[in-house]
Image (tube, rainbow, N blue to C red; front, side, top):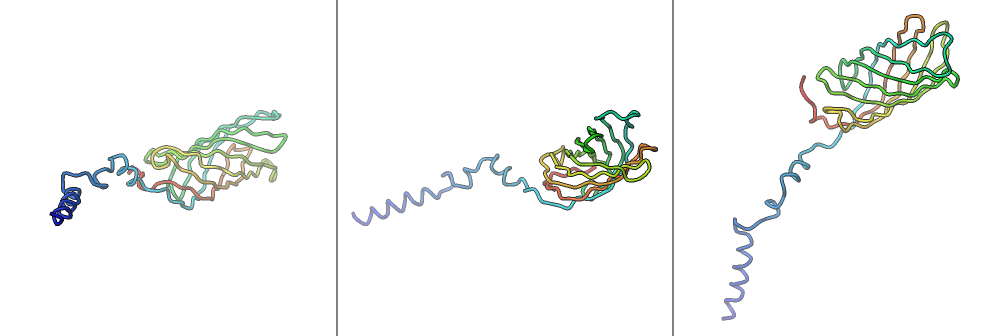
Length: 179
């Protein structure tokens, strides 16, 4: 009879491996499978140039002024984009803070918040520089992060500016939608 005990033990072990018995693989929920299929964000270089028009400040300028900028950009990770920004300019301190929204051709939106400085750069020209932090967006940029620096020149006579951006952003490429 002692020979049957190992046989019974073997039968229990074998039963644990049979098709009707849950295994670690079958215990994984669909939610876990989806999470493991979600790609990790990848850090990518981000650079480009924007051509913008801006709301002119009244003359004489007040100590602070809220300006709206609109235009188009060409970026390494977005292609041609529409640009919209709102910033508060402090003329006394020579600083600005604001938000920027870049909308790609397929509708994906990348959002940035920035702060920086500005100073006269010649008759009717203002040079500016800023640091911008990526704060998400929509589509493939929903959980985007990163940082970029921006610099350029604003022409007070034509109410136009050219802004250059260079930095790095992280987002999940497989979340990309086709236009």
